[in-house]
Image (cartoon, rainbow, N blue to C red; front, side, top):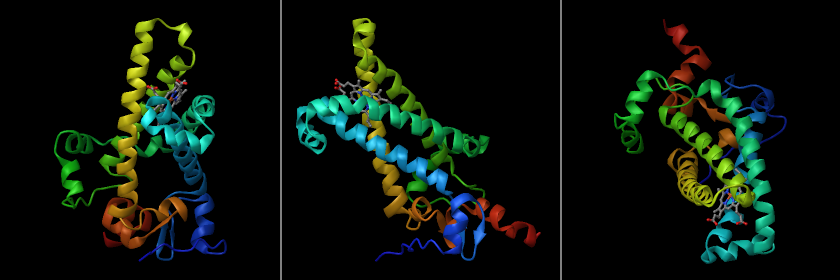
Length: 234
Ligand code: HEM
């Protein structure tokens, strides 16, 4: 059963979501404007191009992936350029979202050491103070940004190996390999949370909106800020 709403260009929420964010339109709230969604999809697509061109270079067992791009030698040419595109998209995304991603002291305590991540996965959290992003999402933002930088620096070294001593090159391969493996695992998890685990979330990256009920459930403080319900109550 699908609850996805069609994206009609004449729909008031779809029009609002072209340029605005954090506004209520009927039963919906705009979560990501068109620019945010486009840059997110650019990062996602270039990430998967990097992954599917990089893995056949990494291990012959993934050689079949190279056929998607016309062979291993083509992958070797495409991969670093796709990597640069991925990094460029990541930088724009970083600047766009940075303002919302600072961890509050309580989030730092709960998510880094207080076991909040496990509670969240067991649907045991009921925190009325969750803003537009929860502590886990903010942590993921910082991890992904760090990983993008690590992949860029190690990838540039791998692109121009003769410019670096052998020991540094070995380190670059280690960093590139470990980072892409952890990153890919994180992204699988990210996709799971954005689709199966929390129905209604995916629409925020297609249509740009979520329902009021979704916002009230997952991001109650953001819901109150956007709808002004808190000020009406007090
Ligand atoms: C951010 C910019 C990036 C640059 C400049 C870059 C560059 C490179 C280069 C030059 C190589 C060696 C290719 C060869 O041997 O012909 C490589 C290998 C590889 N890259 Fe990247 N890359 C980047 C991002 C990524 C990303 C985002 C992923 C995965 C999501 C990735 C996954 C891989 C893998 C799996 C390999 C094979 C590693 C190995 O042989 O041990 N790279 N990369």
